[in-house]
Amino acid sequence: MEPDWKTLPSLASLRAFELTARSGSFASAARELNVTHAAIAQRVRSLEADLGVALVRRSGRSVVLTDAGARLAQHLTDGFGTIAAGVGALREDQGRSPVQIAATVYISQAVIIPRLHEFWRLHPDIQVSILPSQDTVDIVSLGFDFAIRAATGAPDWPGLAAEPLLESEIIAVGAPSLVTDHMGPPDQLPWIWSAGVPFEEETMKAFGLDTQRLKNVDIGVPFLQLPLARQGLGVSFAPEVLVRDDLASGALCRVPLPSPFSVTYYAVTPAGPVRPQAQAVITWLKKTLAKTA
Image 1 (cartoon, rainbow, N blue to C red):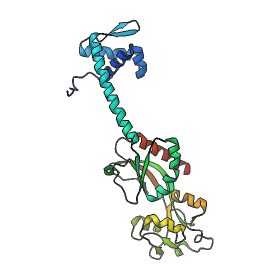
Image 2: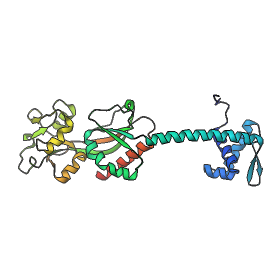
Image 3: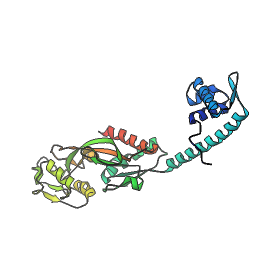
Image 4: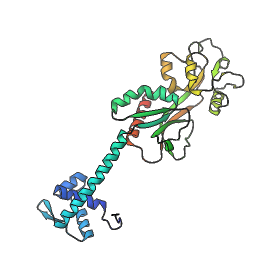
């Protein structure tokens, strides 16, 4: 039977009565709901007034159900039990479903994957699935929990919520064989970048480089730029957070050029509620990246 919500008593009153009936006292029900004894008693009285029938009788510090109260209590216990089972099953299903993340190849390989063991040490029951991609993924239609995206200014992603994770400056880097004390002017070095890509051209110009005069090593595959820079094929640029381990190990060296600007990485989620498991990953990422800042 479809319920007539206009005629049903308030859920607060029904819940207060069901707990009172099950525990046998206003005080016990009040402790379970973390409210006062008087608040529970008032809600039960309100329910009795709404239904026009006595549901309980006071007996010292306890309450005794009337026949009408006993019948209603049984229905409510069954109904709330069904609701609890449905909510529990949904949460269990959501808990088993892995947190799906879309991120660039660089941030996946340099930041997230090397540190996932730290997350699983804290949350061994949460599965994580990462899609490394250079393309902007439609996380809503594809069902992703969130994406990690970068922006140099205020983000403009309609229908999505963005939570900042980390700000990192853009720097130029190259292998030790190229970046030496005697390497000469930076514009005489071979640069690994993609002509015709607006962000890359703007970045090169922001470094003060004439893109028309540079020796350009263009391989057409952006996520291979840093591996080729490590091999000494040329110098390139990247957010500092992505090459921090390379700089520490000596695999790459910083080209002596001032950083022209910074990028901010965001956890981007579909508008609306975020699964607790996904929020746990986002919170961990914020703390982890803050330590590296």
